[in-house]
Length: 119
Image 1 (spheres, rainbow, N blue to C red):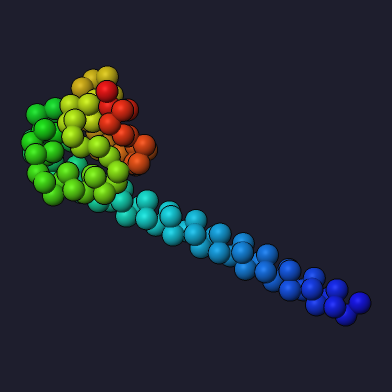
Image 2: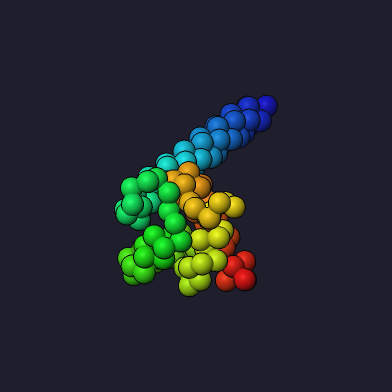
């Protein structure tokens, strides 16, 4: 009987530790996403040379000409080889990218936009 009690307590603590690990993992992923969003917003501000809060295709193409920018977006697993197609994925129907569209769509496409998606 004592063995069953000890086993039950051990299992309870193991499940509790596993739950804590899951919570820590979720918190860490949320922090990573927030950090990536901040970096993306900073990148957007740098790309918005007109300062109007919107990226046009011309601004986006100039922005994407930077090897550093391409490297960062490739780090997010975004295919940067087809600038126009990436712009179209990030922009809505008005042909301009807002800061929210840029951040949200880059995070949404992270790892999902492969060359075949851009065709």
